[in-house]
Length: 98
Image (cartoon, rainbow, N blue to C red; front, side, top):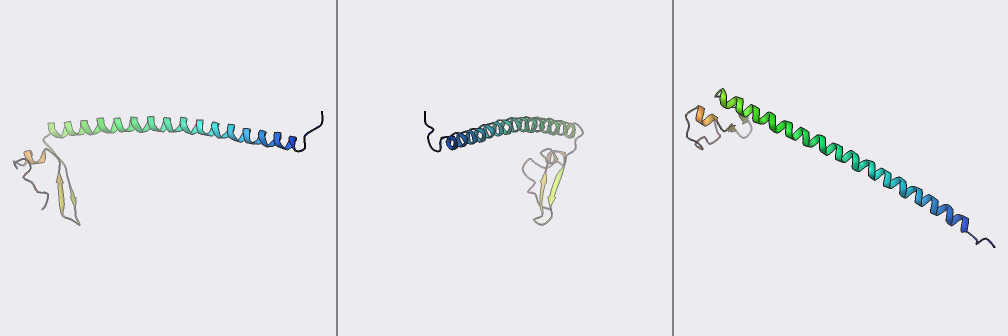
């Protein structure tokens, strides 16, 4: 049986392309695994943050304390939900300015 001209070159090219694609599939598999792990870490951090925030809100209510922020350039003041009650201001009456 006579060799077909260039057949070894085609076999070599096919082997290279196959190796490249298999490497790419492995890279995608590892990337997906890392992404899923990162998403799990992010979800755990979100849950912990929510639990911490809820505990802080509960502690502030129990202590009859609140918090506020002041954006100095705009003069806007933002109160926590319970500060109006603490200061005897009707709910929604504080307009957020000094």
